[in-house]
Length: 130
Image (cartoon, rainbow, N blue to C red; front, side):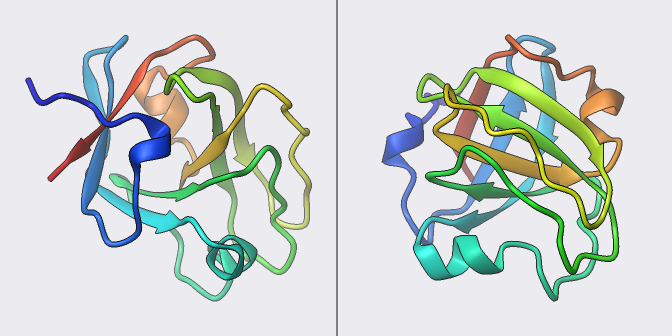
C-alpha cells in the first residue's frame, strides 16, 4: 500500500488518485488540482461534467458555489488530516454550499459519486501519487 500524502504536501503538477480508506474503495482515479487563486476561482466553470472517477481538489477552500454551472456536483469537505468533515451531495447549479470552518480543502466529484461509494463524514481519505 502506498504512503498517502498529507494534504499540505500536494503540489501543482502531481498526478494523484484518492482512496476512501474507511470504505476500502477508490474514490478518484484522475484528480484535477486547483491550488492557486485563479484555478480555484475557475474551478469547474467552463468544463464538461466530471465523469465517475474524476475529481477536483480546491485548496485552501471551505465553501464553494455552482453559479454558472450547468450540472450538479458532490462536494466533500476535507480537513488537514484528509478526513471528510462534511458532505454536500448533489449540489445543484446556482447554489452555494455551507461554509465549513474545519475544512482545509474541498474535493468535488461527479454528482452521486459520494453516495455511490458510501462516502460520509468521518471517512478517512488517502491522496496517493499515480
